[in-house]
Figure 1: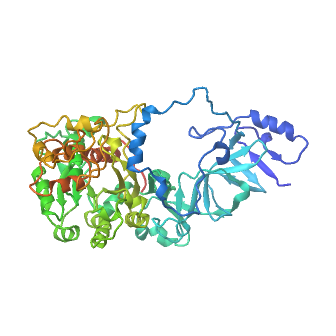
Figure 2: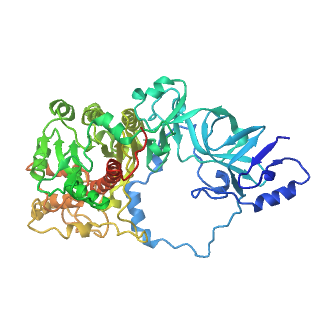
Figure 3: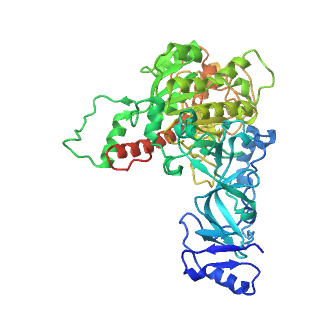
Length: 600
């Protein structure tokens, strides 16, 4: 019989008991059910196993990737929207059966075979993974389970986006299965640190054979995934590093609330007037803006959304002279470089900004692409240029946008991009966003990546701003809502020219969304009347460019089709600004003594 000693600090010394094949087991179990133990406010008294609760089990041994059938096509998604209100409601009488879950109680520690296990200890499991014990549970039969941070060696990780660092672990944050005691192999020492540059971690250099964990991963599957560096709160005592120190070591001095300072703002002398904390924060936000650089800027769709969100465009580059002309018409205060990305990085000696975006040419990775072409290699090289941007400009946050095919069909490329960012010390989030969820009146699914530098918090993806009936959100924007408001005298809105083709097609209901707009307009994208195509201004508005947005003289439709919808960019950067503000408010509080410093 295996001897199990349950140590309950909340009871008297006499309450320590041994569970086994004893004649009074029935009485003991009855007492065991009635007693209560102190629990964390974040953890319920009873936790079912993964199988009992019906939660998804993440297999850490399988490879990542997407299958062709994992996603709806744009056409299928459109049919879903059209038929949404026609679906029969499920009977309200249908009830989900209530399952009785085996009860478990939390213990502060447990003695197994004369060995005491406590919260905070780390163990290796028989399957080669690791666990930092955070919760100890016992079920009604006395079986012991451990819960906590589940980890595996980076060298054993199947994902090609994880650096292969020796004696380094990655914490899988959404692997939360209860681990039976029988799976525990031995105690191990694991150090959790938020230092994000392995080559500069002196403590790691001094203990190269010890196990360290500095990365945490959320496996999203079909949903967004992320790999982040630990926060100071998640690091062990003695291995917490001040985020400000990490940021300074990477990019030098950083101006809180943005590198751009507006002129003409009256300053209040803190030596004479003591500002309340909220007043000081509001003053900083009013006075400063985060600066923004737009690589592969095109017509400026991303910059349009970034400016609407509150960023200050500082520079942009694009090798197309027509796109550069359009950009300059709308952003007179920004430096516009008519160069490709690699020439730009050589020519611009000071591209440092707070936030950078890159939208490399996407035709190579488009789901619609089936034939190789001469520009594929050059386009692929541009995708990896964002890591060059990071190394030279050292932004606090970088964003990247591509066709959905980059993640869905070319995961080997997207994984390499993520790996490059992580190796530079940038936590990274990636996934697919549908523009229709952010006020864009078209079905347009895009790969989006957010990377945050040393000392920064990784911003989340923005929550949808629009949705289907019953979602509680404003309804999706329609074609009619968009094009019916365009004045007849608007620039690039030549209705007669759009009608000159003489092509008649079946009219359709304009109370829906357009299909994906491309460089040539897009398949089956035409005016709802069926009597003409869209004007360039209508295409631009369907991409959510403002009606007064200016375009150059040539390749207007190509610029519009290549653009990132400004409304998507605006939603993305509002979330990023919110995250940076939270970081900078904490830093301002530490500088002024409102918050105690964290780490070294």
